[in-house]
Length: 221
Image 1 (spheres, rainbow, N blue to C red):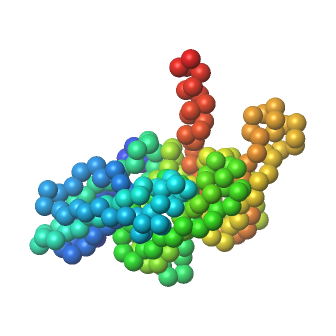
Image 2: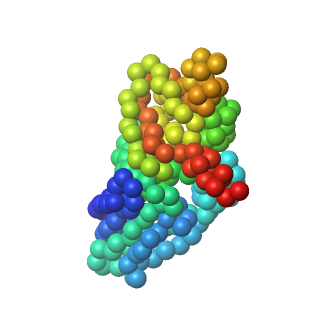
Image 3: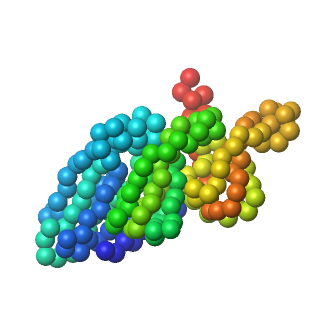
C-alpha cells in the first residue's frame, strides 16, 4: 500500500494505491474518486450500538465505507474531507494510541481498532463533544482538520482555544481554564479554553468552524 498526500495545507486529499488483497476503511462521503474495478461496501461503524454512539456523540457517521482491491493489479482510491484544510497520516504500533476529536477521522488501514471513550464535560464545554474516538492497534490512520495542523509537544500544560483541538495522546488530560484573568478573558472574547495537561503530542487546527460561523452569521442578517 502506498499513500500520497497532496494539496496541503489548504485543499488536502490522499491518493491511496491498494495492492491486490489490500483494503482501507473510510468515513462516509470521504471518497473523491476510485478505480472503476475497486470493490466498495458499506457497514456500520463498529457495530450497531457503537455506531450510534459515534454518530450521536462523536460526530462520526453511522456507516463507513470499505474499499478493497479484489483484482490482480494496483488500484487507487482518493479521499478528501468536507472542509478546506490539512490531512495528516499517523502510523500506529502496538504501543501507540491517539485520541481523535469529533469529525477528525478520515480513513484507516491495517489492524486499527476504534473505540468510543468518555471525553468528559471539559471536552463538551469546549465544544468538542462528550465522546472521543481512541484509535489503537497496528496500522495507518488519516485524519484532517479545518485549516493547517500544528503539532506541539506538551511538557506540563498548554492552553488551546475551544474548537481548535484535533487529536492528542491519551496520556494528556483536558481541563477547563480561563484564557487569562477573569476580566481579560471576558473583554478579550477568549473566555474559557481547554488546558491540556501532561506529557505528549497534541495536534491543533489553525482555524475553527465556530469562528467561521461567528464571522458569517452577521452577514446573513
